[in-house]
Amino acid sequence: MCAVAVADIADREDLDRLLRRFYRAAFADPLIGPYFTEIARLDLEAHLPHITDFWESALLRTTGYRRNAFAPHAGLHRERPLTAEHFGRWVQLWRASVDGLHRGPVAERAKAQGERIAVGMLRRLTEGGTGGGEGGFVPLAAVLLRGPQPR
Image 1 (cartoon, rainbow, N blue to C red):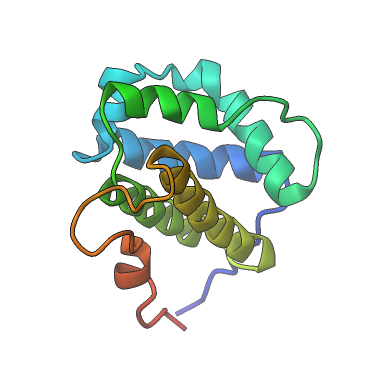
Image 2: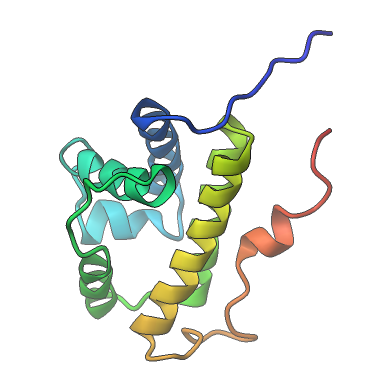
């Protein structure tokens, strides 16, 4: 059997493909999907260039992102509170999306950055707390996706 080499995240096209994969999963997810489809009513085609700008800036060191990433999440939280469980699911889907397409240092940075963003957003939204729930914030990714990795 021939193994297929999986490339690292290298450019905006890679990010576009990754983000489309992630948002397909997120929109369909029963826990966090309603935040995108019912509350935010996110038009992905209109919003994707901005999301891609954000990740391109964070991972590929560009300077195209000039928005406030926190403000939309604060609006969602006011509408329907976001909890540790929501952010944990986001992290789980993000890590799975990255792992499904890419391997390498930028992909690893994308996963680590996703977790940092989730923890930071949750802390800001809950004024330093853990967002409720039993046991505080432990990303689902830490439990479900950090097990043995395929070799």
